[in-house]
Image (cartoon, rainbow, N blue to C red; front, side, top):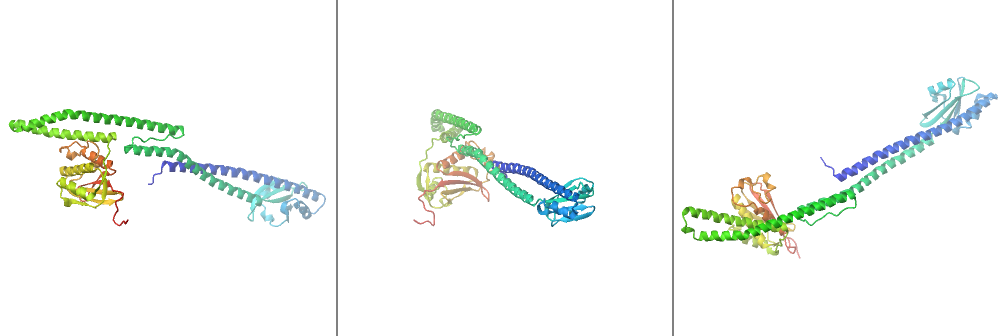
Amino acid sequence: MVKLTLRAKTIGTGLVVAAALSILAALSTYVVAREYMLRQRTDVAVAQVVAATRLVSASIASGTASKDALRIGATVLPGARAALNDGGTWYVSGVGLSEDDVPPQFAQLLADGKGARQRIVLRAEPIAIVGYPLSTESEMWFIGVASLKELSRTLSTLQTALSIGVALGSVGGGVVGWRLSRRVMEPLHNISDTAVAISDGHLDRRVDEPKEPDLARIARSFNEMTDSLRSRIERESRFGATVSHELRTPLTVIKSAADLIATNRSELPARVQQTVDTLTLQIDEFAKTLNDLIEIARYQSGSVSPQLETVSSTRILTALATRHDLDPRCIDVEEMDIVVDVRRLAQIFANLKKNADLYAGGLDVVSGTRVGDFLVLHFDDSGSGIPPAEVNRIFEPFSRGARHSGFPGSGLGLTITREHARAMGGDLTLESRANGGCRFIVTLPIDPQHESPGQST
C-alpha cells in the first residue's frame, strides 16, 4: 500500500476542497440563474398571450369569425403559434402545433375557466404554453406558445462556463495547496536534512529561520536543541579526554612497578608469580582500554586529522598480511592507487584480523574490487556469525555480543575501526555470508588520478 506524503495529502486536500466548493457554487449559480431566466421568459410569454387573448376576445365580440380572430391574436406572438378552442372545435395557427400537443391537465384547467401555464418539450423543443379562457364564452379559450430554445442554449452555455469554472477552481485549489505545502514543507525538509547531517556528526549545521512565525519558532527551538546537544557532547568529550589523560600518569607508575616486579618474578613464590602474571595482564588490558578511550574522545571532539597519502592497494595489504602472520595468498585485491592514512589502515587491518582470530577462527580471505570511486574490501571469515538482533549495535561503543562476553576486550575495537575508515573518507559495514560467517566491508577512496581498467589517456 502506497503511503502518501504530507505534501501529497495537502495538495489532495486542497484539490478536493476546491472542487467541492466550486461544484457547490456552480450548482447554486446554475439553479438560481435557470429559475430566474425561466421565470422571466415565462412572464414575458404570459404577457404576450394575455395581449393576444384580449385581441382575440375583442375580435370575436365584434363578430369576427373564430378562425380570423385567432390569426389576429397570433400576430402578437413570436412564431405566430397559437390555438383556439371554440366549444370543442380547434383552430391552430402556425407550424408545429396541434390539439394533441396540449397536455390533458392543462386543457382541464382551461375547461374549468382558469388560466394555465406550463413548460413542456414539444418535438425536442422546449416551450412555454400559456392559455386563458375568453371572456365572451366560457367554453372558448385561447392558447399561445413561446419557444424556450434560445433560453435553453443560454443555459447550456452557462452550464459549460460553470463546468470550466469548476475545473479551473479545482486546479487552482491544487495549485494553492501545492504552494502552501511548499512554503510549509521546505522548512521542514531543511530541518530534516539538518537533523541527518547532525546525526552524521556535523554538529555545526543549523536551520535557517523561515519568515512564518510558527515555522520560525520550530526552527529556533531546533537550533537551540542542537546548540545544547553540541555543548553537552563537547563537555562529555572534554571530560572523557581529561579523565583518560589524567589516568595515564598513575597507570604508567603502576605499570612500571608491575614490570619491576615481573622482572624478579623467578624469585617469588609460585602463588605470588601467578598473581604477578594476572596483574601484568590486567594492566596491559587496562592500558589498551585507556588508549581506546582516548582515541574515541579524539574522534568525538573532532580533533582527528588523518595523514592521507597515495599507496598501492596490493602492496600495502600484502605487507599488512605478512606483518600479522596471514598467508599472503589469502589477499585477493585488485591493483589500484588508494588514498589512506597508512597508520589507520594498519589499525583497521589489525583490529579485523584480531576480531576474526578471537571469534571466528581467523580470516579466510581478504578480497577487494573497485566500485565507483572506492576500493571495497571484504574481510571474510567462517565463524558462527553474528545474530541479526546484534548486527545493528555491533559498532556501538562497549557493545559486545552475548556469546563473546567471555573473551577479553573493551567493546571499543569495532567502534574505533569504523571511525578510522570514516576519517579517511570511507566506511565500515557488516553483513552475513551466504555460506556462514561474517563479512566486514571496508570502503577506501581511490586516487582520482587512478585509471580503471578500460580507460585510456
